[in-house]
Length: 259
Ligand code: ADP
Ligand code: MG
Image (cartoon, rainbow, N blue to C red):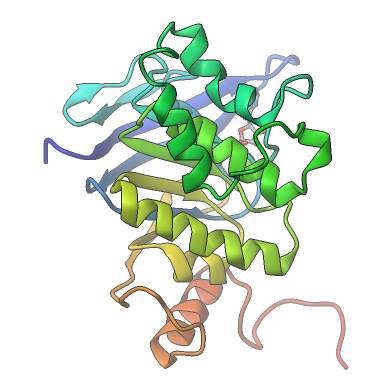
């Protein structure tokens, strides 16, 4: 596969301030097809953010390589857009200036001015261009953060628990927004989530990871058509399957209560 994203024998270890070695990823092999929506799910601290940071080029693997459309990832580039749980907007800039900031830094603003309006409209923030981040809800700030990542026309959008801080209803609306944006812009999306329901609702492929040092435990193809029904029997079957893999289902769970 030349098109798409490939993790080839990726290992990552860190040295802590005490000189201890932490193995975050232990030989990750993964192929992601162009245009797929992939969710990474696994226990906290298992290396999901590390995988995204390596793919973003913000850090380098200790061993192994990552390729995007045949080119080895060596540094950050605009072909990969990043969205985090915290929208990370500049509080002193209004929404329009936050979204166009990257284009201005790259001296592309004049040429791509129309893009700013297009992406503001795409994420549903038309009319809020002059608002500052503190005047908007968490969901709206996250929409701005999405537009800021999309403005560079990335091949892949890397989302690290982007909906984690939102209330349940806003979160479900934002899931549909992500799918709408994906269907319009046809990019690859890779999203870290702790929410099994969210993964089954969104993903073409769910990568389930083991506790640290992380390896891939299972890759599950979700063959349900979009839009998905959370009450569909196959949806429920997949949700139970993943909960079982993650050890959050079944009576055999080791808990210290009996009601
Ligand atoms: P996740 O996103 O799955 O919760 P992370 O990828 O953030 O996990 O981290 C995986 C492991 O690597 C954790 O144990 C974390 O403490 C460790 N780690 C991540 N970044 C560093 C770093 N810069 N220095 C030392 N340890 C790190
Ligand atoms: Mg993380």
